[in-house]
Length: 177
Length: 388
Image 1 (cartoon, chains in turn brown, green):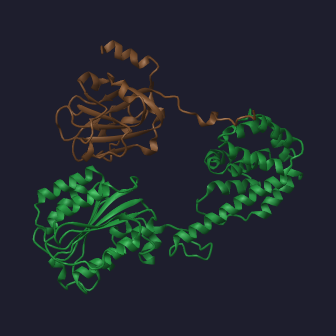
Image 2 (image 1 turned 45 degrees about the vertical axis):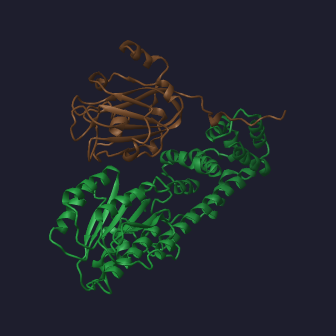
Image 3 (image 1 turned 120 degrees about the horizontal axis):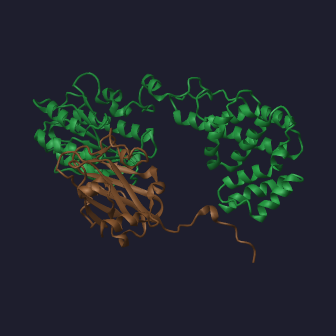
């Protein structure tokens, strides 16, 4: 995929899935308490370069993001610094409550090795066919660029589209026929 | 009242035969364990506790995390002492047991009774601690029994590597007069980061931590029985809300605004509870009594919460809000509120599952504007419920 093609893919009816994240279920394992996931995910915080998501005990991070409705995931943007930004990122679709011990139990839906372009904001286009019916996304950051103790992520953005899910507000009582 | 799954690691090694804690170290430990189980299950009914032993032939899980207190206490019976404690294996297996807990929303906690000498190296313990922290497991260590050189340091190292924001604690209990359980009651192991373990802890400690109502509204001391007091208070509020809503409906039928206001004010008692347990209802009561200066804007913001819970209540509250704002000038008849088509449509569209363009709903609106028959009003209430 060329750079131009992936850039236009963002515009081609893919939306930022921020609105569809179910914030009550979002979890992040091994995050530092002062530098939490909100710094990387939430509107406003993620644009701020000073606010990062940082790992705590070691360099790995496990992020679980459920969605309010079923979505298709097209691409992700993971931004970070040159040294401490993430390198290998594995994505698992529809796996609930994973832990560090079972990340290797099943193959990821997609794996991305981030280049320095990606860390500056170039989106990583994913295997779209694997993410057609996503209720929850687990992001496993396995290591960082320089192999340091702490991984720092400045921004995580998800791009995709929604699947036609029934809107309960539109449900009407059937007339007698 | 944190939702928590706890695994308690019991030391049943040979060192527990010693009698420096009365009647024996093991017995003191068992008492402490039963107290902890009780406290945990009381502080939140959905909490679960599990038990494993670290010595004997090997680490053995006696009970996986369960909220059944009887099962936990019964598996403490007939435990035998012997062998050596394997602290590392015990903690790791406890972590595994917690990983497979049924309710994944529970916080994970391990309580370790470290009574015998620790044969592991400090490094190994630190690695274990880091692993626990990585998986967001909190650790409480009860250091008692055998006092060996280096044991406190090893345990400190373990605690340091696990501790994340002071969720993990260590308690050192020296041998002596006081029973192990008595000493533990006042520690964070019981009180859990400063909230109440109020059912079990001494009333004095609980009074500070529980933060309940200061005057005893219902003849029940909230410190002694917080759940009962809370239940009584909540049911009283609900009853008031129901009476209010009923009074509003009665008022719509015929009476002018002022009479309905009187009916509601006599029907409902003034809320004496100063704590903001249910601000929303206080606002409604204040508004219905036409208390000047009542903060209708705050009430508006809190309306949306009520709407989700109880449609009838929300409807009644909306009407009382409307009445309050229309205040003194015109005899704002409640039926005028209903007559405000746009207002009614806006209420109805905010109710989930009700489509204002639905002909049934339109019919009801029309009939309400004419003669408000109580029957149709009930139908309208049932209608949104059916549509849900």
